Length: 140
Image 1: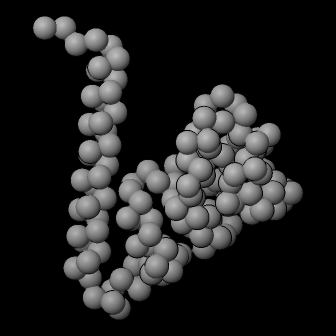
Image 2: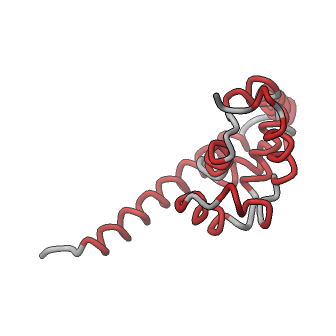
């Protein structure tokens, strides 16, 4: 029996989603086994609040992938931002992880429209605008 290319794509997408959920659940189990003090220490090491750490983990391992892609689309170097102000960058990641406009964002990123449209839906738009104006954050 031959599976169509479309069906294979759907199966591949569902498999990847399932694996991401399993990974997120494992991470949540690990986090839930930590004491409050240990959890606070891990969050501090990551440069985020305890709440933000839990939020990011609950959202899954790729929940903030769009942030780096958006930064690149805006000629912002995500690595430079992370090095310069880790806490600020991780706060932006937490906001991205909870964003409800993922579909529109991904669509715009894929089609090269993000730089013109992100201000209409991105909850990090103000921070991204600030970074665009900072010479130390720009690519090149």
